[in-house]
Length: 353
Image (cartoon, rainbow, N blue to C red; front, side):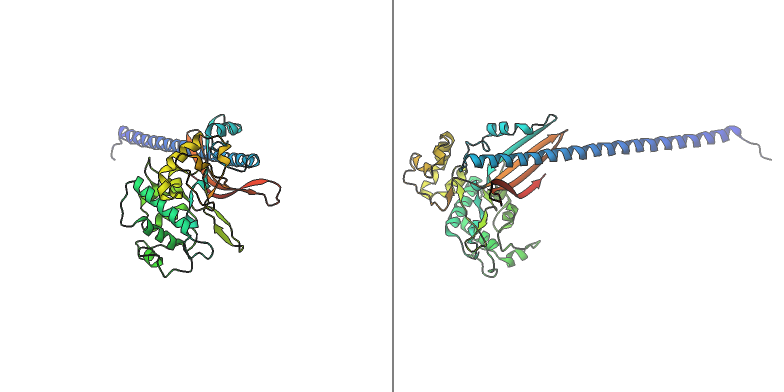
């Protein structure tokens, strides 16, 4: 009979016990880690949700401010509460959150060039000549400002945009460098042309000749997306829809003003912006205030291209809560309520990031 080795057996038992203890500790640590991560994740979800709700409240507060503004005035300019940062923050003070931060920015969407106005809707096959000129000038100005040189000239890019928009005419390209479906289907990867009004500004970046830099701009230089909009649809005389292409003279940027004016006057755009900033609110309510700018006495802008009032606004609300940030960007239309008893705002576009 072989002798027993109690010390060896006890040693093996101890090793097994230690192994089990180590495994149990490891499992406990992992369980605790998972529970902590789940708790942190739950807190993060909650914080992001609260920040999103705060930003949403900012959008609705801004819409209320725009409705109030319409009762006070029929024109829109930078002196008004919705546009002036100090006045706007004071008006939205009721939305201040004790444990978070909310910033709201309101801009005039009618200060931008309406891309879809480039084509006469309906019947949506031909250029709107006046909008064609404005868009060619705008692209040329942005291109020069960004120092870009490409194969396509502004007129060629506008031809390609027109082909993207026009309907029922997918066979014939516009000019020598337009682009219909065959061109886009031949790309890698291929994609569909709209053949109708653009629904999102990002579509412009997909048009032949529009480079990423031309579309996005640079940190200190505006790109086409900062100067143009896909919004502005209005009822047409035949009960369908059209795009007026009107630009608010009181809020348009220097580049948009330069594109709006005849070439011989485009250098005055900076002077118009400076005059507008210094002028009293009452001055900006006059249709021809721009003629009071030195050197602009002979300038005559087409009344069909300009307005002093807007019904389209872009609202950006950014909220911070517990280290988390959410931003909501909405484009809204200010219009008479369906019952005709007052003004309201309708949301046309909504993005949260």
